[in-house]
Length: 195
View 1 (cartoon, rainbow, N blue to C red):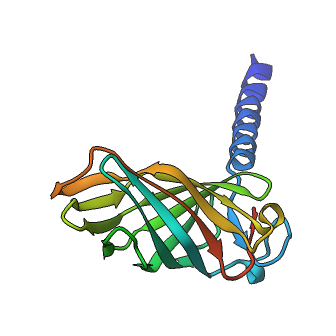
View 2: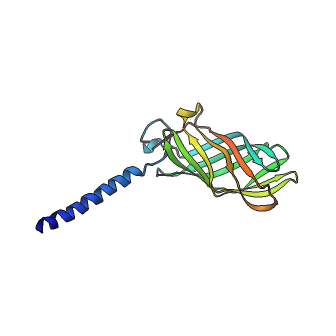
């Protein structure tokens, strides 16, 4: 009986310790890093990013059109997810008589999925689109899915890629039933996806 009293609490503490160790190793972090090192040292973590997309393709059930895009964002602290908070997003040189105006900036969340690769999710952005009387609608980037790839995999300085990402209609009268975005946003400074 005394042995059970002694072993019982020790066994509970051992199991709790193993659970904590398992939980900490399962929650890997994501970092955009200025150099190729893993883990990324705090001094080498990217704090600001700028991307250029020439062009972005917007496919709708009414028509397709293209625009160039510039995106600037600040990069949050090292965590399980790396948060990029947009500071500016502008669209220029749209064809088909279209304009895209940013009503609200949002954020991009990156979660590392492998070497130099992260799942990318956009949220909070609101974009008003007008196209020569054919489209007058506001779309949100809620759950806009893409991929972030670091410089070792891309042949450029690192980029964000969206392929047929669904745009959510949140307002307007002339809104196509389908609206998706495809584009390659290339970084102006080198980054690596590390942990």
